[in-house]
Length: 80
Image (cartoon, rainbow, N blue to C red; front, side, top):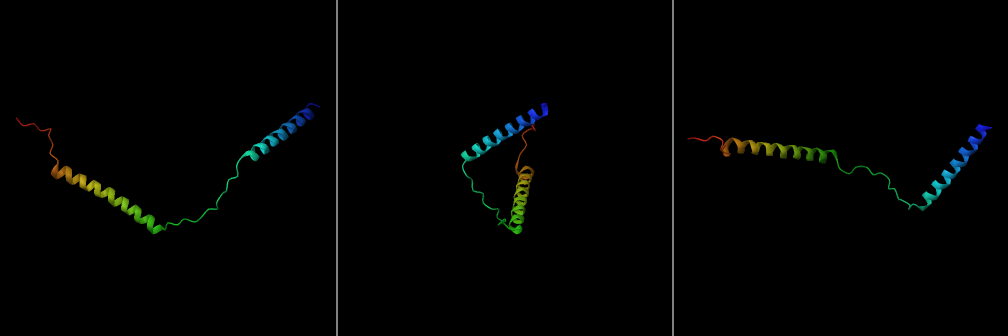
C-alpha cells in the first residue's frame, strides 16, 4: 500500500514538473542555430603568424641585450 502511494505521488510530481518545463519552454524566444562551417584560415597562414610572433619576441630580446651591453651605463659604481 505504501509503495503504491509513493508511486502515485512520484508520477504526479513528474507530470507537474513536465507541465512547468513545457510552460517555461514556451515562453523562451526561439534561437536560430547556424550549422558549423569549416575553418577558413589555412595552416600556412597560422604557421606564418607563429613564425612572425617568434621573430618579434626574439628581436625584442636581442635589442634589449644590445642596449644593456653597449649603451646602458651602470650608476652603482661610485668613484671617489
